Length: 472
Image (spheres, rainbow, N blue to C red):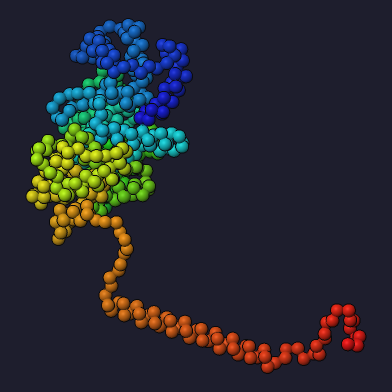
């Protein structure tokens, strides 16, 4: 439902199954503006207070609604472009499309995985680790994916969890899904059997969304030999969105309790996303494992500059970029295509924002926080949790100015070198003694062959034409 080829295949399959029941025998892609017109028109025949339709559909309306229910079922881009509403910058309600480029990158990657699994017959679904800069629309995108699946497909069970309950519930990421569902056209939105703020939604189609947090206290108490935090224990989820993983109280519960509850099926969908907080912690290790091709998830990295409209400042006319800013621009130009899948050249407005933000963070001695929250590369995001004797600014400058490795030398204490030399000298002496013994042994054997006749019998000359006993 993400890759165009997979969507086309499912569309053809539905058309073959339904045949003459479809007008013209096909499922149509109706233009966005036409869909919006129908949304406004059909809103007039729905009574929100009594939650009922005031009159039956006309034939034309019935055909349109049937087409949209099928088309949105097989295509996330179609659904989100026409019917998904989000809160923009905490200020107003707006359509989710057009997607930010950062969101387009996520969609492209999960579409790639879907296509790869579809063509190879891989048994698993889509599982991704998402490392990104702040406020790049990743959580909104993930929640829209869960909203799409639970409202268009039956019997899907989704889990939402952030680091703490207040970030998980209706004032956090669950609120994004609630908003999208509430603003769906009434003829696309399944009836709700239960809806408990901050906790869950249960739809009449059999799908549900459960809200938990990384601070879950489920499971046995530590003093009784149990484990604190057992997210997902004794449940099965076909979908999950976990966020702010770098600040979870006990992220190990994801491995212990949740992952065994995520089935290996093509319908599985799971996004784990977070900024970085420290190095060699659970989130960093999870990233490194996936980077080596181990585990079930792929890695997706979204750099801060992925959305050009987000982080920029108009530079003064006389502004000249600092040397380290220019070095950063060259580094992005070299490594950026790996993450953006296109050529990357930062605009002056982006470079000016970067330079100002970096200077501000350095003045506050918080440059490590800046690099964690606005990384250009994954390794830049995973800063050491401890503090070095060298300022981050110095380490960053050294990294940017480093040259390709020419050779590698080892500096060792003098006593170790002496010990190694003595050991080598003893080894050479042993080899020399063994060689002398071999030479002496060979000399004795050769002398024995010269002085002793091994066969005392008379020698018989073998001359052609003569028989044995004939005179010579």
